[in-house]
Length: 441
Length: 78
Image (cartoon, rainbow over all chains, first blue to last red; front, side, top):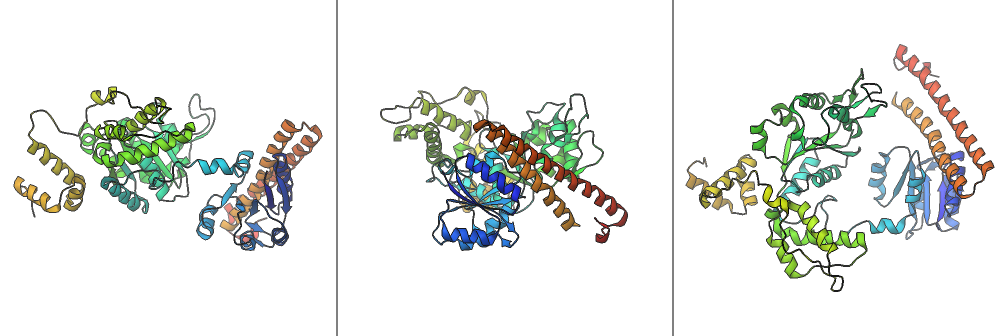
């Protein structure tokens, strides 16, 4: 049960909310002005303060100053528009909650779920980058720098990387880092049926086609002022891609069956597990669309190139499963070594599944994960690694040269970056390039 | 223009909010207390707020008409 002080000048709202909170079992005191509230704060101690920002005799913000310095009162602002969050957060820090009108029961109840809210964060010992990403290795540090840079701009991003590297996590991290006003909306282009793809992307009006019984907004509109994540972009039928291109070029969408268009302003983060070369050769993505989407391409490293992050990731997943199942399971060094020796063709997703399975099989006496005899998944053999040009019969020198050249190409010839990622010194890189005899120094 | 628009948004959002809170209150009242008399008075509040929304929308319609003919002349509104 909480002691709540509710401050709002809208009498009907005040009355109903007082009754609602009382029915939920809380003690509620109501005030309709800053002066009255200030008076009450001086005399009583409240666990929760819920207040309107704008009151007839001043701003609700003034009440924060009236609170005693070391108070633990939970502050909640009632606001009509989510954008107010950003302004108040700048002024008073993020330890403030919001009720966004129209307020419903779920929103109100969430204010009092103190314990569960504190528990939802998985182990705080592991640093999360941009709220989503785990790892301290050099390839990840480079990725973080890319995210930070692109977040400060409005550029569209194309995420490249193998299946399971966490493209959706990176997309959410970019959204988080850019502090966008709007929402993050994810859509999988490979999952849409051919007939519905335009309606999913751009929406439709009631009656636009048989079965369109309601008006529907598309993902572009839903993500306005935010981030739209288009996964598996290369699986979108090529003949339907011009519509997407038009929307990106004009920054307007027209719902199917509508006569007017809607302005949209959102960052499009698209993703594919094909390589840039494969995209170019196979023709699965129109060239003009590619350049619109890949203003800023970001390559997400596979897990085997950052094996030093495996212990951190294991810890992170263990903490999450321990929390989910209310357990206390750990891992011994031998198991961890086996996880680090495996090359994870399915990347972080496969690692997570392996931990989950080992968690279910865990030795409850010793409280330790139990790994299966054989880590390889059925997919690890079936799925060839498309971009690795390694074949039996190639010499080590040939493979090395190919690796160096394609890395350089990826970084547009930036030798410093290529050397960093390859884990060799700049001098070594120059020496190698010299020996190939094709470099302009 | 923007100030005018914001006022309309505000004038609509507040009654909608009261409707939302009262609808939740009505549900909870019936679920927990079964007090029908109380529930009816809550529904009356909701209906009154709907009227209020409708009134705001009517004013909005008139305003847009005026704006269409006279640009953003403030004195023509209301």
